[in-house]
Image (cartoon, rainbow, N blue to C red; front, side, top):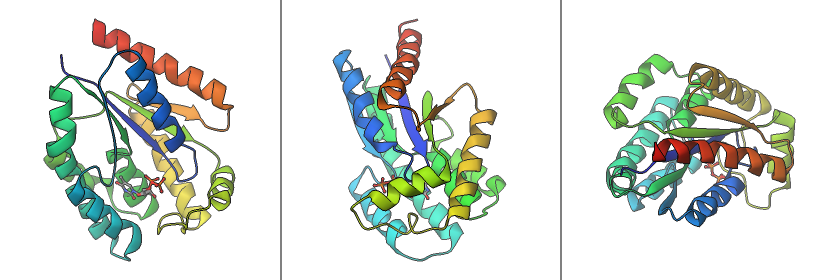
Length: 208
Ligand code: TYD
């Protein structure tokens, strides 16, 4: 049976990455073969593109085209083969990031993105998207506490992140079946309990 595709989203500093490993471990504990990956990146070529996108100054359209180029390679070389092989794919960011950052954050018209999305993965959408949401001030405080040097996006101002967050929340309303909002200001225990609930639902649907 084909595997399931789970994506993780949220503004920088919302604490998403720490939950990716928990979800992968939880599913492995259920005997599922899990492929954990990320965007931009996930392939050698994709990681090269990631490096460009996170460091070089460029036009917003160029940024969108590069993340989609990375995604095309990732879908073809990693995601589709894994799903076909019954593995579950757990992916740190996917196309919702492009709508949030390049459209919400940079102001690119989503109508220009939609045909590229169809071209790159028209046949494929996540089965479940976990959107980690936090107030901008909380996310920024977390970023500032971090020890690694901030990348190009992390250096953006609060109003940029406010637009990214709003775009995410609007998508969560538009795609309420797929996108589940997790309030990341809650305790780790509460967040994990919510994650397990969503995963159990998906496991049930996979058995049905
Ligand atoms: P992120 O995945 O949060 O990695 P880390 O936690 O290691 O910093 O960072 C990737 C950045 O790329 C993030 O700031 C959002 C940005 N991004 C886009 O702008 N558009 C996209 O389509 C994707 C996938 C990411």
